[in-house]
Amino acid sequence: MTTMPHFLPLWAEIFIAVLVLMGAALALLGSIGLLRLPTFFERVHAPSIIATSASWSIMYASLLFFSLKNRELAAHPLLIALFLAITVPVTTIFLMRAGLFRARQANMAVPRNISSTVPSHPPDA
Image (tube, rainbow, N blue to C red):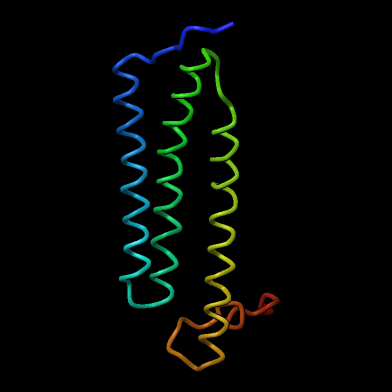
């Protein structure tokens, strides 16, 4: 038994295409930032911010496409975007902390550790 293909309205196809192209352009911008920025700390910042924005743009396109195609809400793109929104900042923080640790070990000019300058107990008054 064959079913008739379900075509999307033109406005939806255009909007989905714009979202996907915008996500691809943002991903390209993050990749260029990764290649062109001079220091590790600048290089790690550009892809993390841009990749999250690009994935959200593509997630919206995917959500709209599958929801209109199946005529019901498609929740799987939301789960993927939620996973990325949680994991990308955490891994970026770990990379930055590791970079700071290595830079401090090499006596490079980086901001000092604020936890070593703050007393662990309040001064006696």
